[in-house]
Image (cartoon, rainbow, N blue to C red; front, top):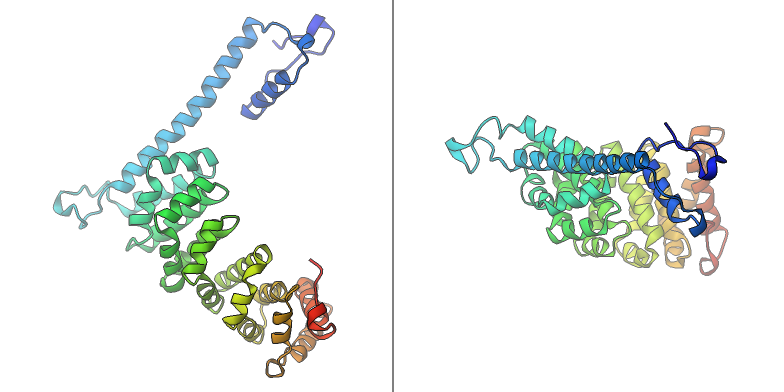
Length: 336
């Protein structure tokens, strides 16, 4: 039964039903004034002890699950280095795929992601599974790298130290399986966003060129996600705009906009907007007569009028018209 408040004058208190409630109870107790503190009843103390034990037991159980998954992944596949002595059941790619899938689910939890790396899981991904001959295992490995790395600096640093960036860029640029390329891009984005070391490796390995080639892929999902990443990198790191202009990025983005119209163009135009924002050199390149960008934007605006699903693309076109062709380059800027 729930307890009443101090002196029996407060409404009965319910026991928290989950870990979040337990934490909230602890915070509330920690913020109480000294005069408000009251002895904890035996019933409440017992419930608290059981709740904490259950929470920690759940965490330990997940660590054990990760250890079991790693045992499956560490097994040598039939025909591999273990030769005839390897065990077919443990080396079964379907079991390995299931292990990678479960690990990805568990590592959505940041603590589990950190524990996964402590268990040497990231090293296994980097040294074996990112280059595994089975595509289904390659894309799952790339997905797991990204899942672990997002928002966890220590994990990002370990993945970078193990050479994941180079391997992921190679997968994005050359892998024959579309799913592998898409997941490699996801992992790359998790290693460069809000991670200075990751961005430096990305630049040193000519990542922007790889990204541009991905935007020229026939795979729509890959094109969209590549353009979206480029747009965000330009917004977060405007100091690299000069490098991109020197690579001919303006000309390549305009060429992509000239291709047959698709929803992908919204993200290309967004990237071009980011490139010219507060950057006169980018504006001047957009004004080059051979690009004929002003006419292209005018035609695109006419095409998109009255089409609600393309309103954001229309806004990008109108912003580019305003910034590139209605304002002197030195004074050009764009509403963010």
